[in-house]
Amino acid sequence: MNQITALVDDFYNFLRQKTTITLDAVTTWTKITTPFLGLFNDSIEIYAKKEKGKVILSDDGETIHNLELSGVSISRSAKRKEMLERILLNYGVVLSEDSELTVETDEKNFPQKKLNLLSAISEINDLYVLSKQTVESVFKEDVQAYLKELDIIYTPNFISKGSTGLEFTFDFQIAFRNTEIVIKAFNTVNKLNLPHFLFTWSDIKQMRELLSSKMVIGLAIINDTDREIKPEYLEALQNKDTEYILWSNRYSNDSINKLKAANY
Image (cartoon, rainbow, N blue to C red):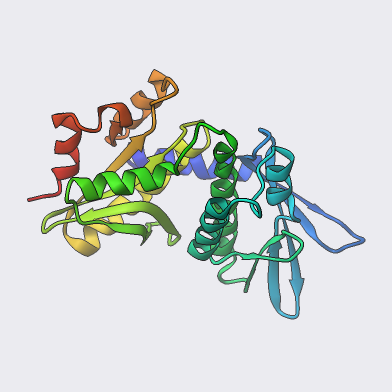
């Protein structure tokens, strides 16, 4: 067992140990408390219920409700509504009239659909940053404009299956004959989204390189314009052989060369 395999195993063990399951005998819904953190730094909880041979997964309306409590209104902002719809479409999640996020699946596809719902919740929570009046655009769109400015051809919302059999979504992919880059745009970096990116990127690397016969590079583009990035986050990226570009240095030769690294 190599070092990376051991780390992945440790990550899975952590998820198992930190996940709790509680059955409500009255409603027959099962509450799944995950180790992932929500908007208020509490554990994200989802609910599951078997119904007519299917499994229904739900957030019980908490995700949108918490945004509203934080002063973030989806209905009053066309930009936020567009972003929400894009996230829901990417992960196959349905938003009910009661603002409940749901997915329907069978037992075979339960792991993937559960991951999709948790990923959607995490990304929707990021809409909180749009409540700040100083935020004029979504960072992912800024990165997209940056790639266009550099005349780089890319694929947005790139989906790839990893060695675990699960599919992961990256913000952008740049592909050339012998190499490709998978990119995550970080408007903020924290103890939840960075380990998730490092895990997903390492999980797809071996599979992508096997299928495409290309060297696959992981790249994080990080918004540091109004906040200081903790050195340990950058060290974590380096320790996992992952490239990064700080937004304030995006026009430096070093940053541009990292994006052009796939061009051979």
